[in-house]
Length: 266
Ligand SMILES: [Zn+2]
Image (cartoon, rainbow, N blue to C red; front, side, top):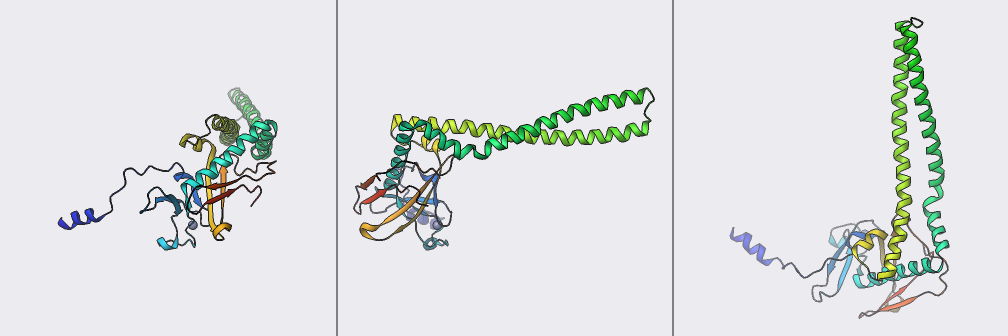
C-alpha cells in the first residue's frame, strides 16, 4: 500500500490548466497514418505541440516525430480557411462548380442508375402481385392444379423477396446520395460562418474538416519547410484556383515559422 502511494506521488502532476487542443482529433501522421498526440513543453508549457503517436523513439515504428506546434498549425488552418472564404466571396459560381466537380461527378450518374433500377424493381413487384392474384383466382376456379399453384406461388414469393431486398438497398443508396447533397450545402454554410467569425471553434472545425495530415519538417534554418494537407469533409482536398500571389507569414516564435500556400503541391 505504501508503495502505491509513493508511486502516485512521484508521477508528475497532471496540469489541470492544460487546455485541450481543438485540433487533437483531426491530426494524422502523413507517413504512417497514426494519430498525432498533443503535448506541451515541460519547461515552457506555453509551447504546445503535436507529434506522431507511433514515433520509434516512443516504441513505435515511425521514422520521424512529425512535430508541429499548435500555434503554427492554427496559422496554417486559419490561412487556408481565409483563402477558401475569399474564393467563395469573389467567385461564388466557380466555387460551387468546384464543389460540384468534387462531389457530383459520379453521384449524378449513380443517382440516375439507382433511380432507374428502383423503378424497374417496383414495376416488377407490382406485376408479381397481379400475377399472384390471377394465379390464386385460377386455382380457386380449378383452372390451375394445386400442385402448379404451389410451385408458381413459391417462385413468385422468392422473386418478391429478392425485389424487396433490392429496393431496400437502392433506397438506402439514394438516401445516402441525398445526404451528400445536403452535406455540400452544410459545407458552404460553415465557410460562410467562418467568414463572419474569422476564428476557429471546435464546432466549425468539425463542420469543415475531416482530417489534417502532417508531414516531417524538411531542410534546416531558414529553409525549413513542412507540408500540411487539409482534407475537407465531403469534398476531400481542395486546391483553390486563382492564387497568384503566395501569401507568406512568419510566426512569432523563437525559430520563426514561415507559412506558405502551395497550390497543387501534391
Ligand atoms: Zn508517423
